[in-house]
Length: 338
Image 1 (cartoon, rainbow, N blue to C red):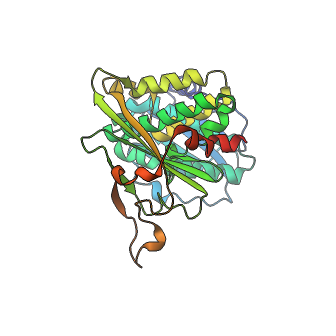
Image 2 (image 1 turned 90 degrees about the vertical axis):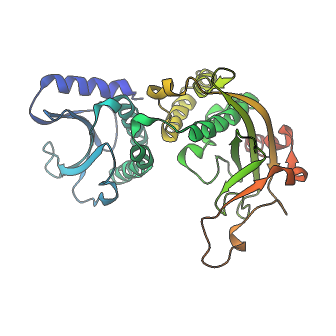
Image 3 (image 1 turned 120 degrees about the vertical axis):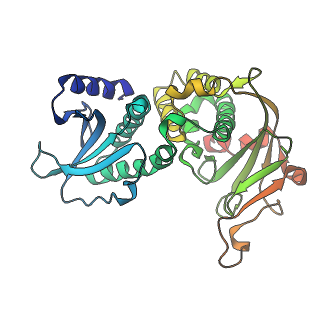
């Protein structure tokens, strides 16, 4: 598997040559696409390029306004019937983060078998990068995003400790990193995680009329983690990530997938210093089964023309739907194992 140092080594070698214009070197990895690390001198632009058949049509209009990235198509001079999809970073202060993103993208593409599918994967990944680049790679996660990620990782850690045998499967259930409707998703179950750290910690914000809609799923749960945030007392997001990586260290596939999920969630090692002074102490945690008259808004109850609803529920009104850990895990990860 390719790591971020591999692409950085290619960039270093290309930049030392100081050859005017765009130079490229193929990434030594098996893929349906020819993949290159690129460098443009004297503009000092590092990038990655994917070679594909000219017969394929690639729409790039939606990526024209991405901050910090320049995306373009051009002929691949190495192959007569190929084009290059060239992605270049405009500011070198984010080079480490960009290298991580490129490595993750390459790893995703190598799992595909056809050129057409692979180039579509590249475009889908660029769409996922949109949020990251729109806010600027150097800024890291917002406090709210850090807190939400901490809550998801806390539950992932609990899942792994309970069912450590199937680590790769457990990591695959975490889909919140890809901005899915719910944070954990199995074959016929899902868990939405809410992490609060305010005086009104019993109030949970629900994003959308489908988030707590169990119409198309057999078992849906809401997991509420209440934390206290301070500068010195508790566990940092970095420590939670470190602990999970240690937990997964004996399973190379699970660890690789977890690191890829972190990338999709916007967590990069280069930003660790931004998170080191924000600590979390768990005040309480409680799960609820979403069924019957649970206080919620669902899609089929909305009037015509109403959508994208955001609303608040009070956990004090959810007491009768509380479930313990045994019931939560029995109906989710344990159910998958059985």
